[in-house]
Image 1 (cartoon, one colour):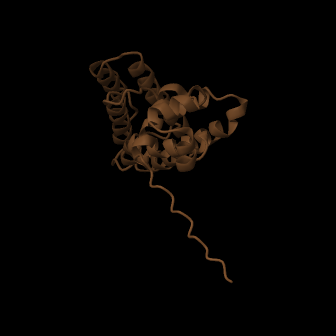
Image 2 (cartoon, one colour; image 1 turned 30 degrees about the vertical axis):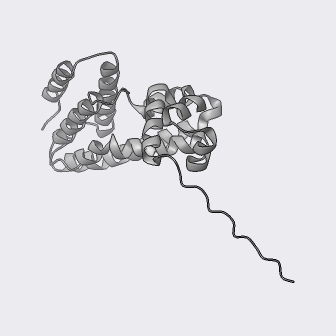
Length: 203
């Protein structure tokens, strides 16, 4: 006689919103860095259990990569928009103003997630550090291409080294993040940007 097979029970639907949980994980990583964020910190902020976290997002490294994707989509979108500015100075201004908006938003976390996580990574988290550095290199390559076009368009003189200019710009943006994290007001940050733009090289 044939044996009747009982259909496997369907998995229970998630009792939480994955997008909300991921946003909560992002805030933890942004505040504490990759290594500083424990699984307990993450699950408590996300409002879920460890098994639920692993089932929905994978391990801690996989969760961080997804949080980093969210960070780039929501918090760094202004960097992509900045490249569409008609001049190199316009690109710089959009980046600087966007950086201020990002650092003075209602989000509790301040600073740059990439910088926080790459600096604080030890040998055991080398893969995360390399991931952050690779993403930063991709952003830098797009910036180099845009500024090379700007120089060809005559935005600044041939004596200006594009790599040096971009190093200055990224250092400035990171400095804004540090100042915001240390309690600088929006007005103070705006004044700093105004000064930097007055010093921006032109032809």
